[in-house]
Image (cartoon, rainbow, N blue to C red; front, side, top):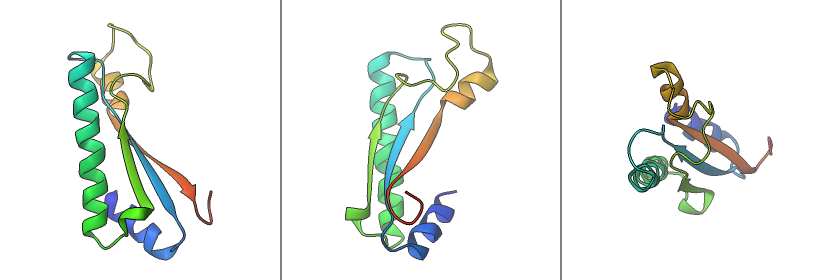
Amino acid sequence: ELDKLVEAMNNDKDMVIMVKAHTDNRGSAQYNMNLSNKRAKATVQYVISKGIAKERISGQGYGESEPKVDCKENCTEEQHAQNRRSEFIIVKGDKA
């Protein structure tokens, strides 16, 4: 999926992306915030390593603060998986 993002950014030289990384609610809130920040940073670094200028991509971890499925403590494995995600927000570009 990241390679598809790089391809899209190569096709639209004005595209600027914000990566939002999320976790499920297992583990402490602080652990999840640190984990999601690491995921966002790793995603940004990967995209930069593929030749995208660092000014065109940024990232932030949100931990468990923005669940896709708000199932509290009764989440199924599928719901946990849906909450563990990265979102790519187009800040600027043809599609923004």
